[in-house]
Amino acid sequence: MADYQATRRRHVEYLLGQLGEHLGRLTWSAEQLREERTARLRELVVTAKAGSSWHRRRLADVDPQTIDEDRLRELPVMCKGEMMEYFDEIITDPRVTLEAANAHIGALTSDAYFLDDLHAVASGGSSGVRGVFVWGWEAWAAVQLTALRQQLQDRMNDPELASRGPVTMVVTANNATHFTTAVAETFATEAVQMHRFPIGLPLAAIVHGLNSVDGDGLATYPSMLATLTAEARAGRLKIRPRRIITMAEPLLREIRDDAQETWGAPVGNLWGTSEGGIMGIGCFRESGMHISDDLVIVEPVDAGGRPVPPGVPSDEIYVTNLFNAVQPLIRYEITDEVTLVDDPCSCGSAHRRVADIQGRRDDTFVYAGGVAVHPHVFRSALQREAGVTEYQVRQTERGAEILLRARGPVEPERLRQSLREALGELGCHAPEVTTQFVDELPRLATGKLKRFVPLG
Ligand SMILES: [Zn+2]
Image (spheres, rainbow, N blue to C red):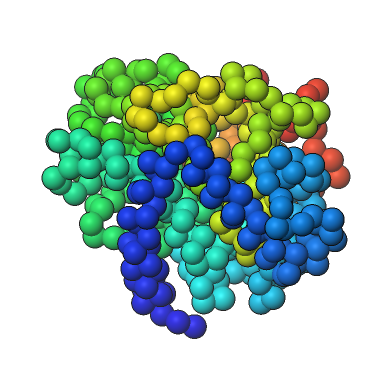
């Protein structure tokens, strides 16, 4: 196997070579963006029909020469269950199987290449069904580029920040099987100083660490941002970030406002999915996020699959990923609730905007003594188990009861042990974790699964 660092350096070189063009795309007109999407959609259909027997059947009547976004809307929807069931038939790279991808993911302790030039990551997703996603070389770089280009453009336009290198403080889960952690590791460079603090650390240690770095960028989950804002207001956290980035959870308006007021720094929200990469990112001028309109097609729809107009929250979205042909996702269903914003943004970008997702914050479990445990602690351990297809984590007095639906082998004792250790490190006294295999997980009246159930 090729040396990881050597391959990674080649990948960073590739990414740097693409950066100028990607910056240019930020200033494209709506018409240019539409033309790009149409051209990429046609290429995607050609590749999907050539390389995937599953897509060949589904797209039998589709002419790749004439398909456009209007005709796309007539195609059937893909869901995660189907995608996992027919995985090997969907992938267009003949070297890739679900078995091989699962074996790769199961062994990950840090970022690694899959079959020399690919990446394979897992996602629990909001629906609770585990998904596996394989990314090609160019596509993996494009994920990073969509995050990087907007931040770089913002920085170049700011007289205070333009002349110095970024020093970013990151407080997130460190989860090698998730795309956000893995992408950041692949493309880490000395030009961007990155100081990482695992969200599982005790709060006092995070505050101490952040104070000692005092960087100009802060990136974390909205729930943690609220905690850090409170620490700053209490005088314990003394950092002076100029830009704040949030991700992975709904960003409530009050969390955004409190942070901006406390630090006088704008918050750029980020909408990432394992299916489409960075689907949207804030421009630090206004709230909400600009869709990566050159790389993905996002269709907000209601519960019946009908398109919803700007200003109306969707029940879910259909995503077509136009840049990762290794695993063609065409009208792929994601249960994110998004609202298109019709007004032009003051930054001048023609990339459409979606509002910050206002749904309920992810539930954090709070134990005796005020020990708070973020859902990512459980997610990280659960995503490692390839046999698990769905799960629900219920808080108990001293730990958690985990309901599992499994399709393959699971090592429940390994899972329980790693979670007991994680909870113990966070300050839970003599933590108890139980697991139970079930045929069906209890769902809410809406049909949605509440994956994390705090003690009532
Ligand atoms: Zn903007």
